[in-house]
Image: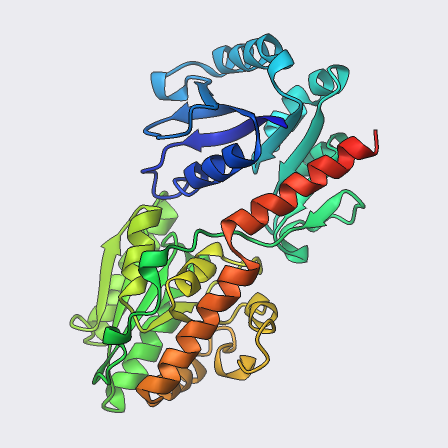
Length: 361
């Protein structure tokens, strides 16, 4: 199979989109040829069967120039790809679907967001398949939708470290995400304050940057909350990190907490689990993940939205587990990711859908 990939950015060091570099690596292992067409490119290290072409945003190309280059590249290399895989940005579908259909290419769109826009509705009509990790991450009822779950790398060097399982008086907590009000970091900070008031020592590391004035104001509000609660020695803002740095940070923590209200499954929860870190979240999607192991009872891991008291109770419960109980739990959450949510397994499911489309020709 020969594939054209259309994506926003290819840069293995990008703190938000760097993960897609590994997607391309795994897709290349399943395809004879891969052409990557991106809006902008940075640093990458890919197999010899991958060619990367940028539309030139990093060079300052105008929108008209980028659209013209898009049509030039998709037409120039039309004989070198059989299928198209569009990652998240449905605008590529709106621009290229008519041309790809004329050329007989099968079109797939990956979409994972709770928002349904007019451009998405139009794109869904034009593609042959829609790939999405959960039912809630593509909220359009269509027979084209294939729920293929998320896929994250599972690194062998991040397997359960028995040396980190000794009893500790300080509970290490991490939360990751763009510093935006929808992430509800204040709930986690309040939970840390509740633990402190009960004489329980904990340290919260918040990983994430800001990309707007609204987010900058929210960060300032969180920093004020930390000062008001006298939590300067308990809450730490470390800014934006790339994907590999985030996973490495998670591996050194006891618990990952997600208080986001987006409704979609946050992939970073799976990345934390792949590093053998237990996850607590108000996201009901976590219940479906934990269901793969009946011995993990969801009530211990899912707290009510904006309920700092319940979160504090769950954190205290985890702290009071014995080292052996923690070790067993960490092995289980990692095993779920290995078996159900690994990146190679996801790519294989996507490739099988494309193969099925060819068989139906």
